[in-house]
Length: 210
Image (cartoon, rainbow, N blue to C red; front, side, top):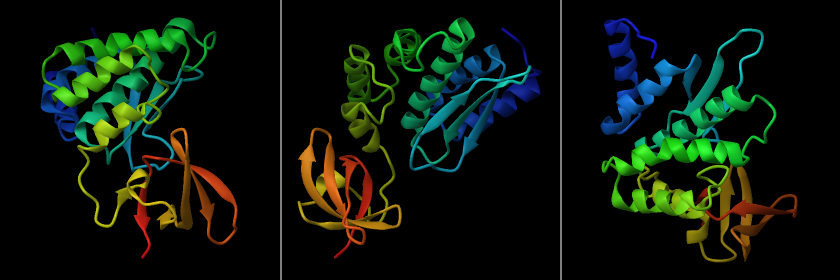
């Protein structure tokens, strides 16, 4: 494993301590040291928790992770993106982004975290369940996503869409909608001003309008 100067390694660990459960800082730092990667912590994004971009023309790979995630969501998102990096290093562009190769790599990264005994039991159980049917992200695994969201800091006036009664008007990304019927894991919602219908994730964070 590549070795950073002790002072530099300590600096890296101090940064990750701000975002990760303490028990998993070393796990992530080891991944960071093993792979040439630019790891950037960014402002929260509504459309994704993290992403991976392969380096081109000799550039380092890049991983970004939202800095507003709770520590457990940050950990799982980081492992998700490192699974992309490792899959790319092994297969390049010959496999699907969330294909079987990525799923196998992601599971390999999750198992040490699950077996560590340092995860809350509800997250541990949700991860074990997810291993049998690995999704493209924790957002699309509703069971895991629901458990992870329970560790978020409460936001004043914000609730999950699934918690609102039908026909409630709510705000999402600066637009107003009326909650409709459930269609699998999304609700059919009508935008107030355009009268158009959209499918909105049941676990979307929204602000009800009285």
